[in-house]
Image 1 (cartoon, chains in turn cyan, purple):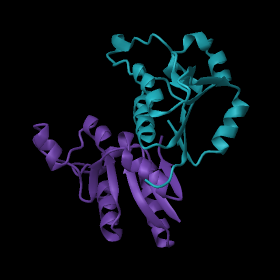
Image 2 (cartoon, chains in turn green, yellow):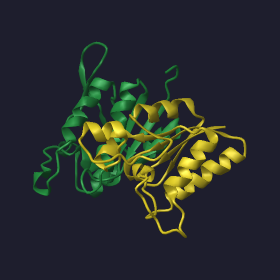
Image 3 (tube, helix red, strand yellow):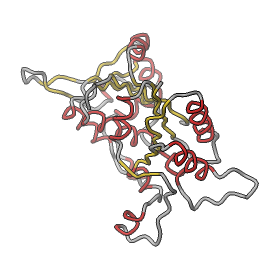
Amino acid sequence: MPVSKSFVFINRKAPYGTIYALEALEVVLIAGAFEQQVTLIFMDDGVYQLTRNQNPAGIGMKNFSKSFGALGDYDVDQIFVDYESLNLRGLTSDDLQSLTNETTEGIEQSSIKIVPRSQLSDIIEAADILFNF
Amino acid sequence: MKFTIQVNTGPYTHQASDTAYQFTRSALKAGHSIHRIFFYHDGVNNSSMFSTPPRDDRNIQHLWSALAEQHSLDMVVCVAAAQRRGILDQKEAERHGKPAANIGPNFTLSGLGQLIEAAVVSDRLLVFGD
């Protein structure tokens, strides 16, 4: 593919209850594999997708949240979480799993940035392709 | 302008597939081009030729298949989403030991890479449905 575009994925839904979170992650990983510039936004109930220690066995679902750990391998290292959405749900950064990437100097750093909503509108504004899941 | 259309909801419950179809037809009529139509999530169900609505209702799969035939449209159904929801072509049906294939004419099973490629090369990606 000759061109690379800026893909922004807005994840708004809880990890279980609908299939959107799981099937969104599948698109994100393919976009990463196709060497596109990928940015993820988690807001509304979508912030629950990143919570640590998920255990959905009781509802007969597979815990797919471990797959987020593969994002760094696909160079998906721009992950923004809406502060207001976290705060409204009584969550903090301590409730989220750790997602990291390696800098060109080989230093491991966090891919997750918790930002105010006003910053998210700038990211959305700059996108070539916008997916809402 | 070159469009790619993504359809995310199944037929009949929601109007999104009808709207996507009507948009596609109108865009072609107005001289625009359609690079690809990609069916994802429950949108894959639009491709089932086992759908049998009453005679006085529209048959959404027939509408899509006919439009694709007329304009040589590339209609891709996400294979992973399709397998979950029981949409199979002959090859997949045989591979999984299923009694029949049900994907309609001019729909093709393929991967999500087709969606990413379409987004890259099109001027606009339009998403219909949730």
